[in-house]
Image (cartoon, rainbow, N blue to C red):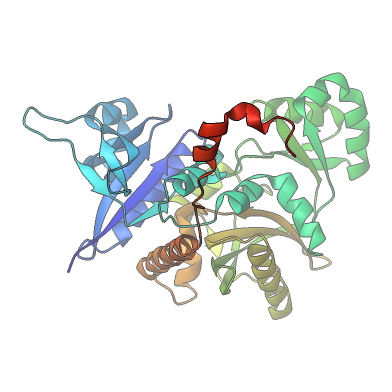
Length: 394
């Protein structure tokens, strides 16, 4: 039986680069080598496409510079048969040959920025590569906290009051922004619009501290979202698996942090090489069956309405006094693929990845079953009449 060639893409130009590496290696470790031929596609912090079997070993990343030197530059290429391959651009070793890897499916394991925001997904669409997860539109919407919350409002899914602060406007009208923000309350949360993993997120009280937090936030993004604080607060997460035709919600979790704000350290530095799976959490979340059902239904509703795909994690804020819940954000490529939630829902990590591969192949078949080009002799006609013949024609 021929093995399925699975390209695992991770790394990327993103503050969440290291987290992505962990997720990519976790995926490789969970897949059965007897059925899959695993090929790494590591994108360096400078944006270089690299491959090499050593890139699927966590030890490799103790020295990123050395890892790059030992790796082989590569690129997507369409061969003479019209098939997209991952082509090695150099050969390592005196007698080594450059290898062209065929791609049966690609697992996207990026977090944040160019890997998760739809740009890489657009590249896969351009090269007609079957890939896991959401498409370019849902990915870009999910990466934009302000847009995804705005969309949730159209579905009558509750969200916390917020204000969008754009750096160029902030510079001109700082005092006006601060006055408007004060309407949200004395304490607010400041978040970069296009980042995840709690990077650049601050809780601030009072105008001076809010101003400092906003100035700090602009180090990471030119757009910030300032949100009204929910108090007393409980964070609840729910994962969704599937596509528009059929989507299922996982059990809910309560992630636990060392402070009211769940930090990057809480999420990723609680264990060794386990990514989001190392964070402290309570599964199932200690909330009522009714609230659990409301959050699960809202998660599936938003996932399907955005035409998301694969596996995603939706994060909610809950006021524990009123039991009111608010949609916070959607992660279209969640850390560790949220396998710890699906494991508690009766689906192993290996089975989860197999399902993602099946969904990717289904999406690709559906795409290629449509008319993708239209045969016409338009250019032949224009070659005869000339471009000038277009002038004055409606």
